[in-house]
Image 1 (cartoon, rainbow, N blue to C red):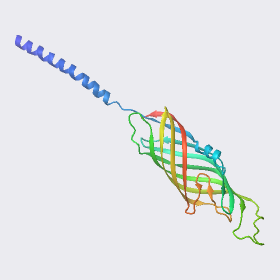
Image 2: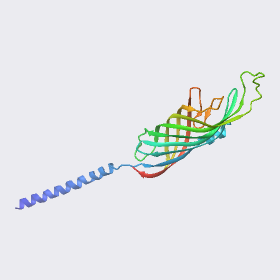
Image 3: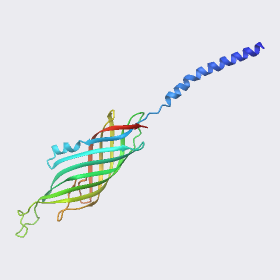
Image 4: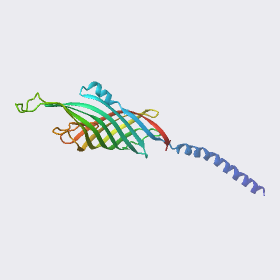
Length: 234
């Protein structure tokens, strides 16, 4: 009987000691399994490259662009840009000015794998762009000047209700410098879909698209500062 009691007592001592030894391991496992959540919400900002360009480029009269995106999953963001531009184009035989508003709407895909609770991006994106603008042909000098086409008789004329449609592919990055405050930049390659032109004169510049090359393509750049309004964390 005594042997049975002693054996039972030793058994409980062994089980208790084993439980105490494994408890720290379980605690460590729980600590290691902590998941870090990132913020989901609306991010709004401004392209600061346009005010800088208007200050240093005499042909870029003014420009303002608001940027925004909304995170819908771990890697995908709905994104949009809304702005206004006014630029003068000086060519060999002409001087023209285009001004108006534009909108670009599409998405970004974040290809960067963040560490822990970081919220940075290296993204690729796509946009559909639409612009409403007017163009003024300020001066035009024919290649050949004669009595029928004298170079000094041109009168400036303006055509309103012009429009342009295009698609663009983007690459860029956004870095969270302070809590919910981001600095970013992007480069874009644009392909013109259609453009309504001034009668008798080719559209050289469309707000939001920039310079239109003979191939119907163009390029863009922006440098942004934006702030995230977090709605939830996942």
